[in-house]
Image 1 (cartoon, one colour):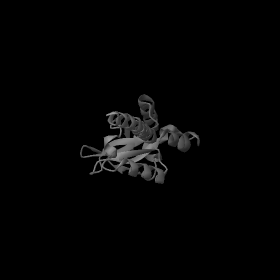
Image 2 (tube, one colour):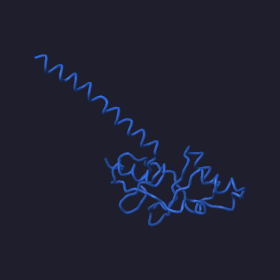
Image 3 (tube, helix red, strand yellow):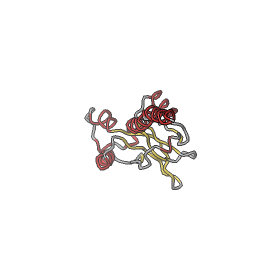
Image 4 (tube, one colour):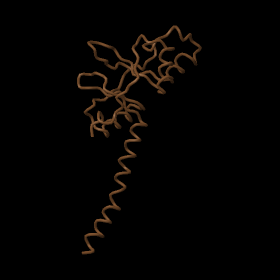
Amino acid sequence: MPIGEFCNREVVFATRKTSIIEAAQLMRRYHVGDLVVVDEAGGKRVPVGMVTDRDIVIEIIAKSLPVADFTVGDIMGPQLVSVQESEGVVETIRLMRANGIRRIPVVKQDGELAGIMSVDDMLDLLAEELAELAKVAPREQAREARTREH
């Protein structure tokens, strides 16, 4: 199952120049705890980093620094981990676990932002799949009962 089939395609994003206030307002407006930081080139949005509400708190608020002096580019994570939309669900889980990340941008083959996948999204997906799997045994028993009656 390619992760591109399941990722959230409505990604809230910012650029490196987005102010911290604007970033916080975007997070509040869209009820998200992170933004994908993109560079826009040739009509494409290419992810270059992530910034979370925690980054804002740890890097600026907790240090009593003036919020207005910083942009998203100043505090975004140093190295972005992303996944190709053609990668499988299991491979994506392994990548997230290996890097200790809860959210991962999903990119097209050319590097353009395609979506985002979170641990919560993954849990929802796996719960649905497990629920379907749980229905197999009762159906098998019912099928066997019907075929053995004759």
